[in-house]
Image 1 (cartoon, rainbow, N blue to C red):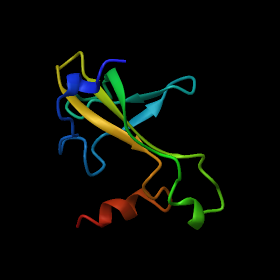
Image 2: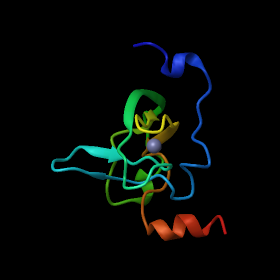
Image 3: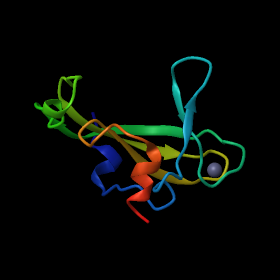
Length: 109
Ligand SMILES: [Zn+2]
């Protein structure tokens, strides 16, 4: 596999932070991200993904009833065909995954 983002730095911008990047499944279990710039939930393409991090042990297992097999962080490069906007998003199980979304956002107020 080629190196993610051609080896260049990648970090999601403020446009996708603080709850501004949203998405949903369609008619099946596939998940779609919506362009944060366009109206009416314009679906973004995923141009590539990379493995940002992987750990043999998930640090939250000792605190949880459920047990993750490992820790991982995947990064996706998103692109909107309509407006040309591009950004990055990460999906990970190495941070805390529980509680309510509003509690995450309230930490930044
Ligand atoms: Zn767009």
